[in-house]
Image 1 (cartoon, rainbow, N blue to C red):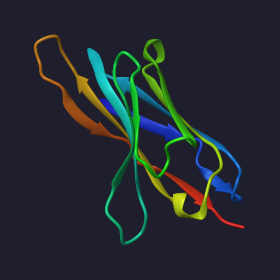
Image 2: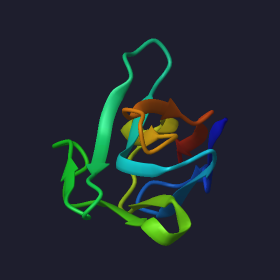
Image 3: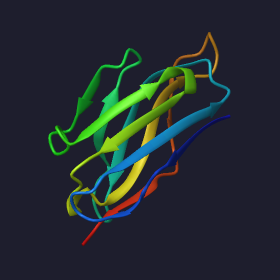
Image 4: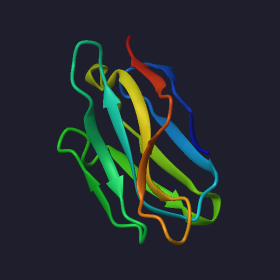
Length: 121
């Protein structure tokens, strides 16, 4: 059993910052890519940022320059540092990871339960 648990969401005013974290635990052999997605009510889930095992990040255009994704492989944790938050950033943010549960199994995709980020004045 693999679990991803997010933390750090909350209510902030426009222009403020939040730092999300997501820790993977359970029967983990290895973790490849990790990422953050978000979904606002009535909208499709969208990719926010990805980070490779080696630490190479990629971002959606809407957050580039404001958000930073990072990871600590020793802690099986991925972070999303969010600056200059805007009302349109309001969404449930989900952690995602490609994880192998044994040395002989291919990666499977796992999701966290989500953490609410609300940006409002």
